[in-house]
Image 1 (cartoon, helix red, strand yellow):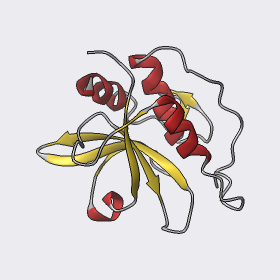
Image 2 (cartoon, rainbow, N blue to C red):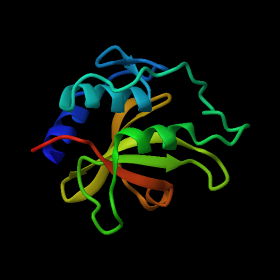
Image 3 (cartoon, one colour):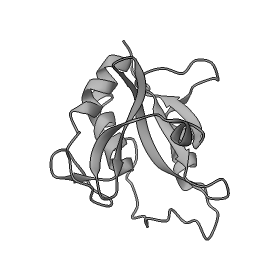
Image 4 (cartoon, rainbow, N blue to C red):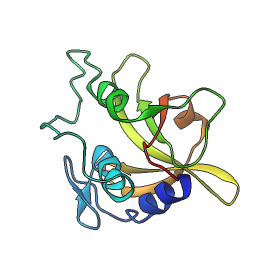
Length: 144
């Protein structure tokens, strides 16, 4: 499973950042990347995605992204971290979780693939500043 997820995610590298989009090679945001990988490795998306703002409803303190992840992805217990997992990030300790990526490895180093405003889809080192922002890890509901 993890290899399929990582291969699918890497296929999106270079896709420009475009808020609310999910079209490989054309445009995507971080949720769109996960949606696109889901379509490639799981199948049709399980629910329609309503319009959303870039701040992910921070003012209302609603954990919309975390709630959706809990509905469709499988939580990964601590100590079972690995490649091909969906990562949910909180960009500030007092903010709602609003960034997603997919865990990977390159040249023996932990990385993650994500759509980042101003950069598009990239594979970044999972450095300490990024790692400490992880709220949860999830696996995709697919069979090997």
